[in-house]
Length: 312
Image (cartoon, rainbow, N blue to C red; front, side):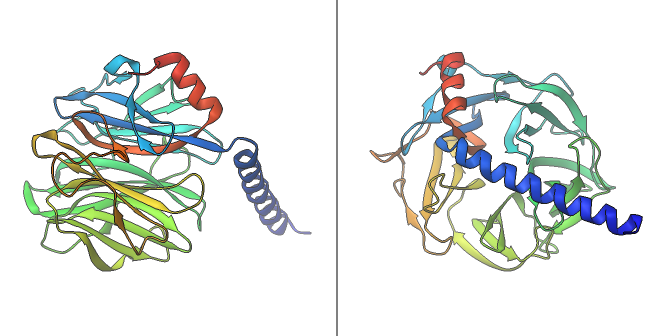
């Protein structure tokens, strides 16, 4: 066996082993609850946690106090998004400034101790604003990427979704355009894979969805999910495998999240009320919750969070 073939064989087995280990971890440590990480309408310098142990009744942790603050730049911690990588490490990315380019990134093994806070500057040339970063995983190429909204030359109509790939959440490729409408500004993208299809959800005078067979696009065939004046959409899968949910931010007066669910990402059911107050006996989010993310967690993680932060 020549060296080149040997290397590719080793890569194949390492990827296969990692996938099998992750599947086994999911079997041995099933998800049992949802954790929301978010900013508040009257506080964009801190991250807050809320936990839903059953269904979608989210209760604030840490006696309503924040769990994390930023140290760099304008010290904002807007639009926090958490992803768990294939090795089990969590990574947090957030908007840190309205006027400067970088984002902030942290790492954590337990969702409690966040470390390695750092600035990541991957803004395209001419960018005057960058915001709402999120991480996504490209399964086909076994690589992660950060995507965000960038505006060029203070012109809202240039706002598009850019991205840069990374293997280690430290070093990044040069930025490329992931999705744009060529002359119409868009923002707040979120990506979820459903079956063999990637769905890119974004705001453009309502919430829209474009699809692709590849994580890095091209994304095409956009359709409107809702015409409501909302922003910050975030989609996640149910930990029991029964379907998907998408939340978005009723940013006017920081009035809360909307929640829709679907078994297949095609047919949707509104769970929150159509008008304010949005919450009912099926769903409740914390007061003044704004642009954040929701992940599923294990029993061990839930108990650690409750032991550390307690309930409301």
